[in-house]
Image (cartoon, rainbow, N blue to C red; front, side, top):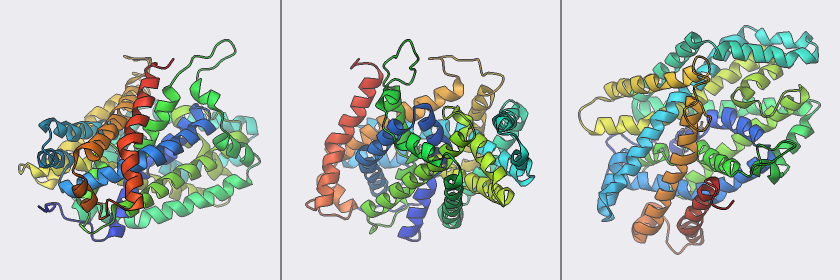
Length: 473
Ligand code: TRP
């Protein structure tokens, strides 16, 4: 039986690659990856991240795209249909639901951070950061700090930018698969890539490029395993490993339905393995480039690699302040970052919007507005986590923003990835899986993939989880 998507289809295979890359490449690569690598000590985090991408996430991504391609609808309805088809428990629909919830939670804070990027557009355009050119080097770090802090400490500013970003997201999602999603990503991905290359060029000209490079690729597992090391004691923690795996899922938009719903709009004859490999390659390159840009700037200007969520917003403006045509490039960069965030945010909300439309009770427009309002409201918790509620730490010493991030990236996404691996690897009929992948189940690539998905992914995710809750210590 062959189903069709009521939401339309991508006009070409390339359109899917662009859209899925648009979903994957975003704040996760440029904002989150560098600051997490910085906090967990650099090389060890980066290498673990890369390992997770290749042996855990790539197989899951193929499986997730394949599920969407077979289910042809929102993740909730796809999972319901696939559970019936596979004669498995109805409870598998919960995988769709938990994805929908994770998407709302992630977007709620994603929008606030994208709001920072929006706020930085006028900041760069007005040339604020050119001031660093004539500054003694000791004053540069406090200067960029103060600009960042005056933004995040002001709830009214944050709410305004957050609102702006949600509204743009809603407008794009309301445009539908071809009208809104596809048009946006075609031009901005290449543009973003070019600006990143210019920045790498700048980073290479800074005095401490090599130090930044080493920081990213030197394998120092002690820092990963003991992130809270001080002179007296090192507390063994699996948190760094968990964070690296969570980041791999986050960066590739996995385990939440984004990639599944995009797979649902894929034409029947598209090759899943080729398109996913292209997406993984693009996403990973952008993250690595972002690191190669940011860490040399960190070391060349006496900043802290572990500076946390503000890292990108404190380092890149220095580069733009110092380089020729910095005002122009800086403005362009933050515009592109907002666009990259936008092509991710639409994929975070698309599963829910598609589902609302499928219930037959809502038009695409009402569905977008409704979901946007809910996300906006939840986002206020993140807004306040940076100012009036910054000391409100209900659990594990984490504020609300950090809790939402931890819960989604480190727990919900990898757990869904594990369930996807089990469903596709162990429960679905092998013939159906091979048919949707347009591959023979005897081909070499297929057999490697199937092996990774059945054994390595579940094993890997479980080990990291068990390690994080301290089973091995
Ligand atoms: N991957 C995107 C980024 O790196 C964010 C994102 C989009 C996402 N869809 C997702 C993260 C689904 C997790 C799950 O910025």
